Length: 238
Image (cartoon, rainbow, N blue to C red):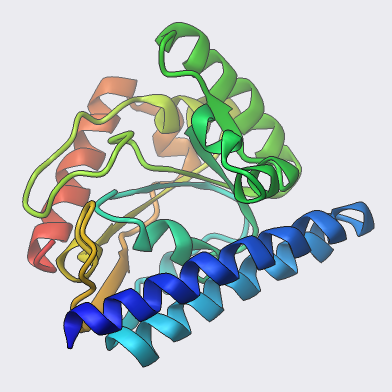
């Protein structure tokens, strides 16, 4: 039964994603808000399908930590679920992602249309320079910035190599950092076809104020974020 449900969900996902991506592209000339409406609708629709078909429910904790001003969200990366759920979780934002995603027909074009920051991994120095410049610009435009500091998905119970890009953006832009932990990989495994029923908890940790971000050494702050995010994720089972 899990196999059948997962197959049905995947079919719906791969049909609906190009449809919503097309709507994002079509409405982009009418302004960012018009296209973002469809990005958010896509996220809510996929989460609804995950609940109805696969029995995956979403619980959000720590929204009281959300700041009034745009900030940098640094999140654990275990599966595709946290990526597609993000538009339903936080205000309008941009992802920092690998450039190759822009090459996916329709979906990648939609990511580019809503201002995602695409980096080339082959040149780390140029990549972090690009992240800082474009991240500062998006924050100035009153949009949040979301980055998965591990860069790629890590299996449940493991820790990837945390990169300093998110911290660098926040420090240069004078922005706060909002860490996020979760257990999405338990129910939507890394590179896993089967989606398992249960509750995925997205837990936002206490906000790190802009003043603290600015006055803390980059490596020290990155290590603190790593410990806090990983510890919270483990407590959730992730």
